[in-house]
Amino acid sequence: MSKTAKTAVPTITRDLTPERTDCPHCGRPARADYANRRTVHTLAGVTRLNLTVRRCHAAACPAYKRPYRPEAEGAVALPRHEFGLDVVALVGRLRYAEHRSVPEVHAHLTGRGVTVSERAVTNLLDRYDELLAVALADDRRLGAALARHGRVVLAIDGLQPDVGHEVLWVLRDCLSGEILLAKSLLSARQQDLAGLLGAVKASCPVPIAGVVSDGQHSIRKAVAAVFPGVPYQLCQFHYLREAARPIYEADRHAKKELKKKVRVVRGVERSAEGRGGPEAEAIRGYCSAVRSALTDDGRPPLEASGLRLHGRLSAVSASLGRAGEKGGSRANS
Ligand SMILES: [Zn+2]
Image 1 (cartoon, rainbow, N blue to C red):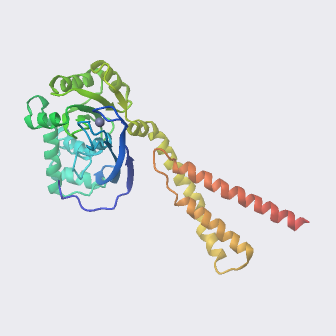
Image 2 (image 1 turned 30 degrees about the vertical axis):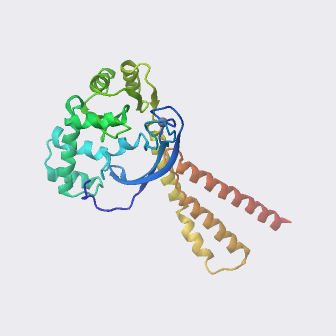
Image 3 (image 1 turned 180 degrees about the vertical axis):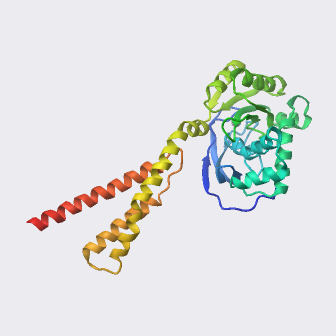
């Protein structure tokens, strides 16, 4: 494990759960037994992963109490690595496609908010080289690792740190955590992906018990062509993230604008400071409702925090309206 990432406080939290709820070996239900935590430096920020781990409890099963981790974990980072796979993909692209020097790559990463030393950049480059050098057909260590599990649950992920650039395709096994094939491609055509899947299928020493991917059309068609009849699972995490991205962006923007509008709350609070009586009390109550709405952050993609803020502020405003009406009618009577 590289020890060169500086310790940092996570700004993003992701809860990942295995998509499969059954044991990949015997098909019986596998229990969500315990949770693991990991911190990973990704391009999006320092990310805390909360991972639910399942285990089969059938005493006769060869995978009895063997941990099964969330399939999406390997798309975020390699096992035991501190940096995200997206950072590794970016480092490789900057070095090989754009011919940047290590100090330049280092400066680029720092500019994007990834806290990393120059030494760590060299390590990341080594990881990238290792990744692309994986050759399932003649790697004895890898073959033995797969054999220990007796089968493979194959995941395919396309990592594209920046839109418009090449995609690093990574095919990995969710049971052993091993990378089976990695290749950088400029396109994501169905034929290209089918080529990668076919290469793994041809050299895999054990049966492929399932395939996991996101919902991208070309991947789905490639998987259907290469693995007919193999159980295929769309990874909800990827699927949702992709589907929700435009909504998330719009929501974030709306939230920012809403926050600007209620900035006056500070002044209102000050005006009620030190005052007694029901009116000042009511003002303080409303201000604290607005404040708590502002700090109520949802977790994308399942919760739109801007929409939620709008909902809470609308409730405050409606209540204020009702209070105003009451006050008004009392004054008139
Ligand atoms: Zn089992």
